[in-house]
Amino acid sequence: MSKYSYLTKDGYDKLKAELDELKAVERPKAARQIAEAREKGDLSENAEYDAAKEAQGLLEFKISQMEAILANSRVLNEEDLDLSSVVVLSSVDIKNVKTGKVFTYTLVSETEADLKLGKISVTSPIGKGLLGKKIGEIAKIITPAGTTELEILNIFIR
Image 1 (cartoon, rainbow, N blue to C red):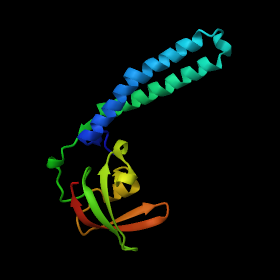
Image 2: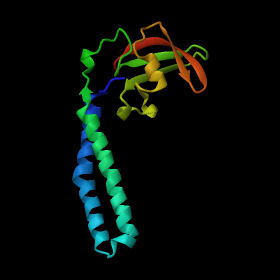
Image 3: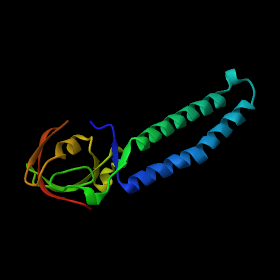
Image 4: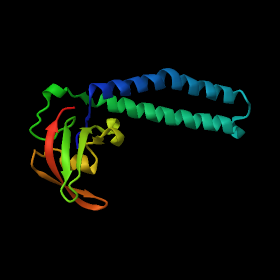
């Protein structure tokens, strides 16, 4: 698997804005909560202080994860994509061979995945199975429910 996160420009901007918000607003807020809890006395028996420190630790972990994703991300330009096969950022019309149902998915990074919007992660079982397939090919996807066969009907950019 690639060490990079491939993001759309919008996905990168949203992640960056969220990170900036955490650093500029949430981090100082957590520091204030710790200071307020510290003022309440003995730290060894101060549950409020312990909770504030734990919340700060979780916030710092989330910030570090987001910084790592942004540091290792590559913004993809849709005009540069080769649509002869399924790639990151391409949309694909697929048909379940068994049921005949047709679905449309866009393959995105984990951070941008949103099934309600038809965006699936390239690291999901379906995403992995579709990558590299060409129109007319059958992707055999192993899922918890068994093997599913999906026919590639069309590859495009939304």
